[in-house]
Length: 421
Image: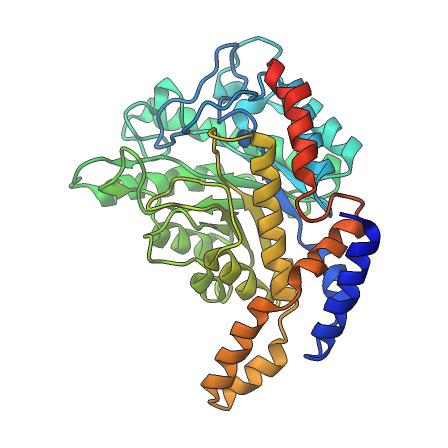
């Protein structure tokens, strides 16, 4: 899209929003606070690099599709991520799982990983001026085959996973220290039961014990932020997930941890946007995993739908950008993976920019006056404002393609790089 066209369209949009008392320049400036953590596992369908033939298996996770071009090495993954970031406005972060270490072709079991296996990632992030986030990988491992890890009644298995997560916290804290920005280390485990269990309480007591052991060592908050992630159900854990929303909500409140809300981890009729303001009353910070579930936790590419809009609106309306960490979490192997990143990240950015452009004071005044028609009219009217021109200007200011111009660049990358893998 030509620069002159983007600029002309933006001037019209700026005038239109100004009639509502909204400063579009200010909204664009505030987008510097919207840092989205890109999930590395979209590049390779959650395979990781533990061993040459690493493939996803078990743990309530399933990737569909076999589109050509997935990353087969750390070098290819970094190349793909750099391409993605070159097509996105603003600064992103990168979210790594523990199976993505630089193991140099050697098998290193998960209770033995260390900072040295991620130093090349830290150096890469430093080179690009971005922060890193981290996750223990408590799935796709023989010691997770029976469906229980940190809540296992087998003490050998439980201790193995406790040690793994402890090692992950050491790595994450070092990432935060070296990069000068806190690393969010998010704990999600697949533990649960396919059919009706009789000892839910027993497993949850064991999980509490494991978490208490994991968090015995305290790290400076400027290095490490600990998060715990809840889920309603998963593949193979349809009847009961040990780490439910209520379990982790209580644990996070009691132990001052970040609560991770993944909008694919709840009942299809639930919206985590509705939970944000409540949770922020009781926990200092939240971690949001933004995805798109279609009928279930299917982790489709994020689109600008009502669910992502409500999430962004609630964060902005609560003035909570400094208390909310945003990450993506989907893995779609049915389409170009670079395109999946760009479409999904831009959709999340657009939701937050649109929320920043809301004439909140006016709408809130109508609400408090009981003028429901006027409130609804404003909310509907915002949907047809010249929003696209504002986002295009945000892209232009950051020297990345506006509109859908990125399609051609991704197609060229596929033809010259991805298709040859």
